[in-house]
Image 1 (cartoon, rainbow, N blue to C red):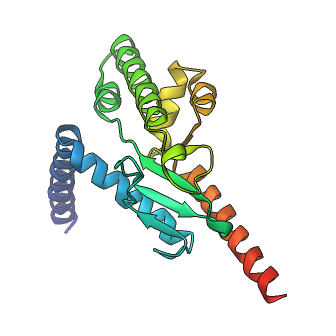
Image 2 (cartoon, one colour):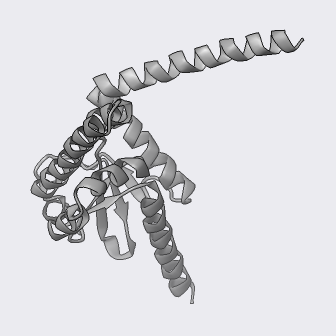
Length: 195
């Protein structure tokens, strides 16, 4: 019985390894798959925070110049927070697979540069100027803490520079905190109206 269990465990491990490799291959090769994965992560967080679509947030809103943030969070008074998902994985995954510390550092430095480039690109889109009622920054959502951690490990000024460019880089934990704050603002607004 023990041998049967070990054999079954070995087969399950091989199946899991194959599925993990398929997922990594899909995320490495297809920018649309990465983007879709990031958008699903974003939507799951918004739903976890208890927000309602078309009331507290909207997806794929078209700005005045035709560009589309992935999500726009609505605040009382009609103010809006544009959110764009950015998933930079290739250099990060290469760094995770690297065999030497020197290779790992090279890949993670490339990952840091890519995250910085994404933040600059997002700043140039100027969603904060294109969306009516938009506040003066855009949230750049990265769907994993480890992606931001690897980037700031090799680029200590990344967060400060992005903030100067009116881009707030957020991960699931910090984005959930932002959403809970927005939810509290809505609750206070409703209480004030009822009073």
